[in-house]
Image: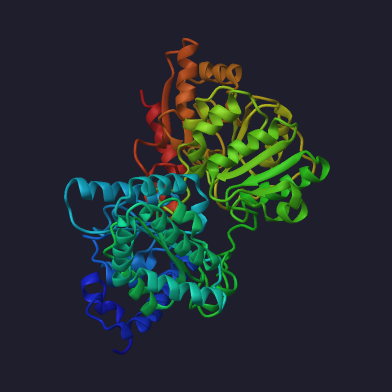
Length: 628
């Protein structure tokens, strides 16, 4: 079969009509399509390129959706999307109203669960497998989980449970960091394929039953034979741990050899006990720039597909990102203070800690995709007089909620949480928007929450956090900073004090973080209509500057609050609570923020328009509160 195979096989049923010899050409075409679309829209490239052959093989052997194929995270799942009736719509990847960048339940019958955070797929897959058995439904459950996701504790909770109850589950461990050496890897692959064959599995069972039936010594003979098999396999494969947990382990095998993959999957398809198949893939496979720099091409913006060079956006601002400002500020402080340590959960690049890691390697800790451990680990360090900074995206910090309460805040340990990607994040979609952290952190005793209006204030807040001697969260957004001049010296802010940005007579706008700049834009628009506004930069979400805010609300009882957080329990809620607690009931207040919904994928600009967080939306809210 020639080129342009993909449009003809955009469903699993059509895929199965191809001969195995056609599949490598299909893989090449899928990779080309992925590179083309991601170069225009951005996305998670390297992992998806590495899993193309695996996705083809899984859909060739199994029958989705009757057989559930569950992908952990979704970084790897672009080929899966293309093979499940999303070929034509794939150009809309990560665009408003288009194909989601991660797996999204409801987008396709082949996406059984929404998946954007890692490590939970084994637990979900086990639940699906158990439910199938309880309802007497046919079909296998196959979980594909990356090696990085195996660093998450919940993955091992799922492994432990599945191995214990011996449910019908196949786990494919996609190992894209480990290479197969020519001797050990090849031998392990041959042995695993031999052990996985149906006739071999039947033979093993028959021999086992016979040995156990021998009077007097049968059980000992069986155990000896089993140990011998396991000893041979353990010499050449890393599967001992999985065998101990109750799995039949096979691998590692080459995750880019489609014929070998199909043979192996056919062999293990009918097994009833838990199976773990270990495949080794190369991130970025088939696209040279991603093969050479898989970390850079893990999550990438627009780029030239011919060269792999990032497209330079229109020069709107030369300002650094908030992430970069944080990273540099932490290095500046750590050079003077040897007690500062930095912790991240598998995101050193994304959280701006690469420079810190290079300069202070003994004071930098990447714990893997294990946010709960990161926070508890930081708590242990803090008890010994050090000053840990935990740099994590807002959406991932949610996973450590109990540790924040139990291990940090109860004992009032001085840990700084650098909460990156707070607020509207954009194209990564519903699982990645950082719109809950004010609500879930504000309720915790002993926690201080700050939000910088610009990059200079971020630096000031970081040094302030180290002076507080209790838990502090600094919340800042994704993307470019405002572009103000940075003061080299970092001076602590007055604790719990807001900033009066400008004064006016008609309306009071209370904001923090990025919303301060948007409020200033709104004030400029309002001035053209002879409406003047007082704008307060809260700086501290908790504790609020009670005296100052109450004083201004009494003077101007027409109030707008603006935040990139859900309204429930957010910044605006804290203002209404404050006024109620002080018996101030004559204030007309309008809260702008995220209503009771999840935010889908789209550009930050589109999402802010959709959720009424633009300067124009603030102006409209002002006019509403000014109405008699």
